[in-house]
Length: 324
Image 1 (cartoon, rainbow, N blue to C red):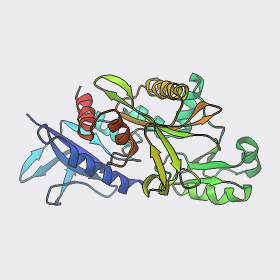
Image 2 (cartoon, rainbow, N blue to C red; image 1 turned 90 degrees about the vertical axis):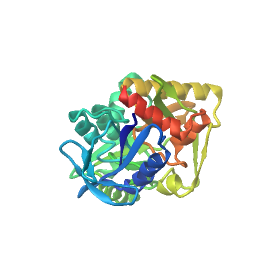
Image 3 (cartoon, rainbow, N blue to C red; image 1 turned 180 degrees about the vertical axis):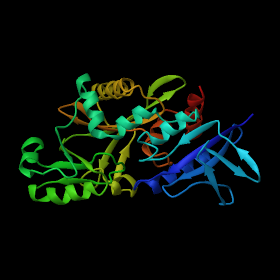
Image 4 (spheres, helix red, strand yellow; image 1 turned 30 degrees about the horizontal axis):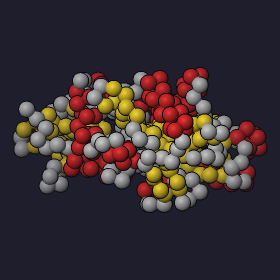
């Protein structure tokens, strides 16, 4: 009997359009012989089911069900394609756990921790995971630009602490640019992390639970045409994404080991894509994404393809792992 799969997409953050693209790719790719797929749009003002005719039906939030043609439909599993809040920060994970509905992403705690860059780095540092030097600011704090520069140096990156897809991030070359960069970051979040610039090869490492085991996918090297891997570089073709990355065997082994270590320390499951920069030939962790892009052009599907895993198999495996 076919399983009913709700594909949740959209969300509350600036990433909602990217999430809709990811969700629709999942919808169009899932094996129709195994699954009945339903597109569920999650927004602040409405939760709706969109059928094949693009008709809208409300979602019953009490039990996460829908009704179409006087027939109530419940779901065996939720495929999470929401980038940002509430799909990547733990809220949907907590809601689905309360309803006892399996889902393809990591657990509530893991989502909350990894979405908060500061908390994630703080947890991992005692395990010997290397990171950039950092400085934290909360909205309302008195900001001392000289103290920031003294700690992290120039150039540096000013980032919204809880945001993805490079929203709210700026590369700062001069101390005079800090105020504007901080204002940009505060438009996305009320917490900021400012990090030292690491000059080296940037790579993205996909790690997934595949057939019951932790699997590290082929590494992608990021070569941005812009000053850094910003929104244009990620989504508007202003970068090269080279899979497999042009690393030495030693570098490859090191970053694979670190990516797997991070995944297992955090007790992750489902998809993850972890970013590193090599400094002095040692991988330094930037961040982890737990609901990475899932379009044909996205990094994780590219890595899966390089490992011989089709998108249909990648998505089916995520559902089967969740149903376990």
